[in-house]
Length: 415
Image (tube, rainbow, N blue to C red; front, side, top):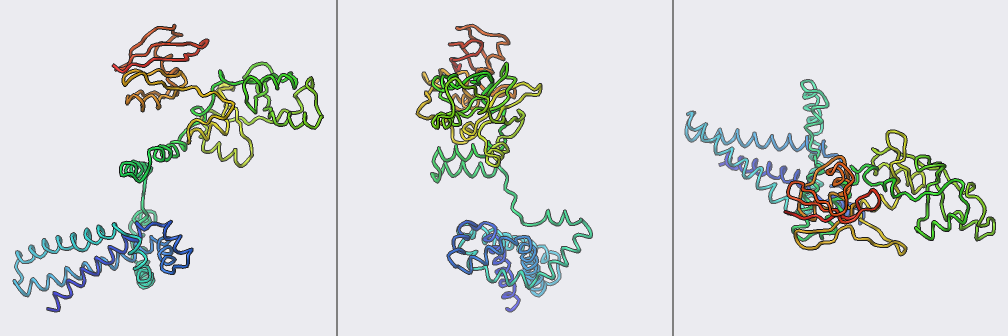
């Protein structure tokens, strides 16, 4: 009778520690921080355990396995008393205890705890602190012994540190949107945050063909004319061509000087030229954003491998990589994509390939181009003419408009 009670008690204790570890692993840390800030002592204890989860894992692993081994030993003793020392009795005991341990000491407690880990984390925080301190000397001895065979790095690799990959988080975001916890716009925003870290300056920049610059020999009235025509607040200053950028002109500097009467419309712009910030094409925009915040600049010139100007990136361009296009009251809003029907769309040559893929549910893959105009130009292998058509897999491209040597508008038909 006592042996049966010992087996049940051992399994229950193992289940308790398995549930406790699950609770500590999956508890909402932000929620615990809120409770701790409000003065909840149990939440503070739970956070302390979360910070020392490697020690906690080692301690719980020892205690949990102790009770599991104890349960198996006691059940074996019971089987020997009931059936004698036969091989069949030993085999049956092994099978039964394996099922009992997996179901009642592993799956059941972890599954039940996963429904509300925060609540159990608060309940068990004090007992877990006590257990961790109690068995800490033993767990350290075990870790030291493991180091002799596998080395410290391997031991650390066996810790309970949760390895959550970017793909795991993206899957959770998609699941949240499917279950209604996130809106479609929120899901897209979160995905763009992950993509932002991998985006290069060459993908976010405005190409050199779209750069509006001003010659170094210009005067104030030339700047005012540019502002009237284009509405930008900053302009690269060049000596001869766009490949010879010598600085950046901030329109506000000139306006401040004009308001105080320090300059006239025919005065040169040289005193107002600021130092330009140059970056390579392969610079990550996440790093560039950090540099913009640190060094307090809002425009960078992108240089190609040959030293020429590939384009420019502004702070607004970086923000648009996350939140999408931003248009102020001076900008005209040109639609990149116009849906004709479910199989036909008209797109700007500057539309991103990813946008076309998503819109038409197709798979255009290329590492050489970012825009659909560049991709189609590459397919032709020459400058196409208006009205020319070309097939690519299950798509047909038709050139609708050209802007000089740039494809301005394309009709895409899904065949």
